[in-house]
Length: 212
Image 1 (cartoon, rainbow, N blue to C red):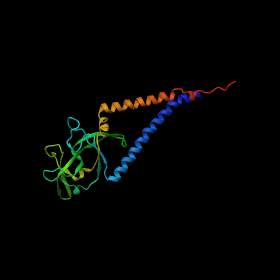
Image 2 (tube, one colour):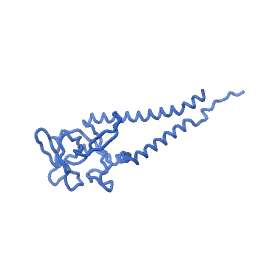
Image 3 (cartoon, helix red, strand yellow):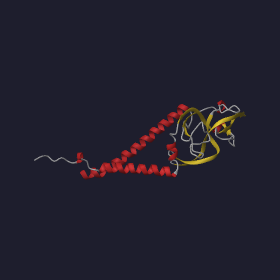
Image 4 (cartoon, one colour):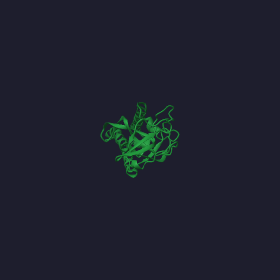
């Protein structure tokens, strides 16, 4: 029985490790769905990406910096405010790029899916044609407007003005191949350490022999 217990110990560690990972994933999903319902958007949190060199310069500098986590709220496109000429007082919005796409892993579908790139820029012009609202956008750091028109259907939400500076850099770092490799190596080392620790005999594991 002692042999079976020692043999089963690593598998118990594997199960505990898997349960921790699953619990974290479920808590995150619950948090995300709650935020989405509260803020009325599928993307309640958006990270400002690194899109220029040096890394801390973005198309929205100085308003936003790479790695900033933005709190986004759903909005009717017709209610958006455009900047007055010569000012940067229009709403900052998140919208789906009309042409650019990327591929990302979807854990619910368990496959790679095609997703439009998300852009964080300021509204500089707005007009209505028929039943649709159209927008022109521009990054605060850019010299010219974006070379496309954004229809209301592409708008994901409006920045609430709340941001968590630089925290998103951690998430950006693990999006490239090197970052993913580092995370996987760290997880593997943590797992091996737990397995080794669980199989190492401690004084409590030694069966005490009765005194004669």
